[in-house]
Image (cartoon, rainbow, N blue to C red; front, side):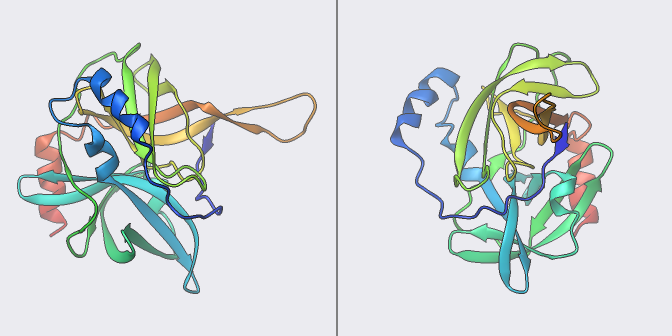
Length: 227
């Protein structure tokens, strides 16, 4: 599998098509699950003042504090990184990073105005195989998208989805149909062909890192230490 690099194909962010409204009826959220889209945030990378790539994450509220969950490799960079809040760029600070599980928590240096935080609730199921899942992020140059998938395997070491992701999707939080957090999008599969010496991306085989260890107590500890 391949850990995502930041997408260097940049473009404007198109509006989410209205056809997504049919999806909301199916998933069964108590409130419109456009919250997944509304909480999705682009984490942009800059060099010499120019945006050279990006990753994704989701904005959460918990016990009066706000934070963003993303992948560790998204924020493991020596270049300047900013959160994209509408047309404004916001400084960010990394307060927790777990390279083994490829998970990171960051906080914006000021309240975000166009990104709406979701309530932090974990899915604590031991085996999610067969469950429908959803994530919203910024794959490649396509702007913000909502994507549906299914858990193909949950073997304890990681979770594999039949879904869709590209460079730039890294760090997108994956939710179940009730809006509970399952994990963080971390990688895609690679396919070796006899016709080429180079591997090709399998964008429909998606690997996510479980966040089961980030229970309410752990989140509170991280946020307090990051103050």
